[in-house]
Image (cartoon, rainbow, N blue to C red; front, side, top):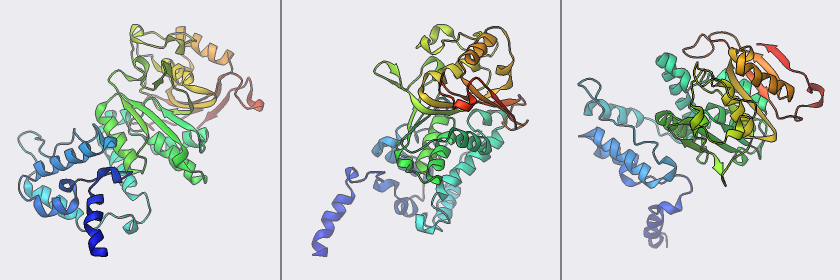
Length: 352
């Protein structure tokens, strides 16, 4: 009976619809690469990635920018080096039962992203927030099972991943946590997608467009902005923006900051509030300038205080963020009337 069933089982195993996570076509499987990729190894690896992306919608657009034949100057990776890479990873089967802890691949990828941010210097700050800061923000935001968490400037995805980890650590079911984010840099978006997948999060709603969250918010449903229980983010500091290009002007009920002079920070804050549910919470990194700059920014800040929206200001230590000496803080925000009773009409300042 076993012999008769085997062809049917093999046929089923080759049906990509049978898999609820990923289907790996033959030319992308490890034995194929190990046993067949001896010449033009870069081409074989590129075709393996292409086959993976073609057969898995979750990888759409994620792998196509990777090129094992890419030249730097006049040189590219030799067949010999690429074979050594394959045989190095052939030493140990990367199965969960061989790992020291369940999320080892995700942790390894996080380590590489952190290492890349170190070497990237100033540009590292555009996609990576130190995990100690992320952990602090997630603990304050206290996401729970059944909630939705959104990061309008996702970077490498750390805010969302640590939100999922936090729910699990507190005994909740992280599969019942809706994660969403937007990132304007395509290559950084691809990093965040891979980061999610390697942490066992195949269904995070991560979107990418060139204009970013202020000028082109991607999470829209029925012509309206989607709302979330928790917004946790580290937006890029001190950007210019174009007022004419901004949709959903109702987001900016407290006013507009100057379009030039690199002062879009409080525009991001107002977007965050606009997409937060009435009983939700915002935790965002901000440059210290938002606390004291005058003019239009002062009027916005006064409006936030008048409506009792600022719950806490946490001043962070220097040199925490890549490539900027600008002092930073974390703002904790809730909608009018949503603060805990004992904190109404007060702002908690913490020198951290």
